[in-house]
Image (cartoon, rainbow, N blue to C red):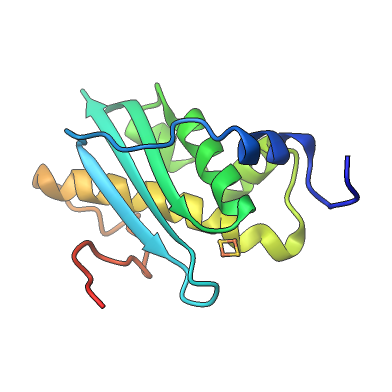
Length: 144
Ligand code: FES
């Protein structure tokens, strides 16, 4: 092991990320970005009867962001939307065995990507996501 402050679990999810990819018929897609580091994350969820049956992601970002999104998708699969909304970035970081303090913002990106995908699902189903939708959501089709 090198002397980095990363747990084995972070390294494992970074080197072997789970659920990378897209869901072609996703129920909801979330796009978020961190304007400071420039990393972006896209999360796809498949929802059936308010249960997240599948989750995939694509992250163009740092190792901690990749490990976090991998862990988020693992944690929310099989959860109801209500349960998934209780998965905080801190819970994800804990599940990863902790993140260095300077990398906590990367786990926030994971939480926001999930919430953004859930908000997309809500909107598609005529429900109001304003109680949990991330404020810094990078909306789809946001062109440069
Ligand atoms: Fe940007 Fe980690 S440095 S998400």
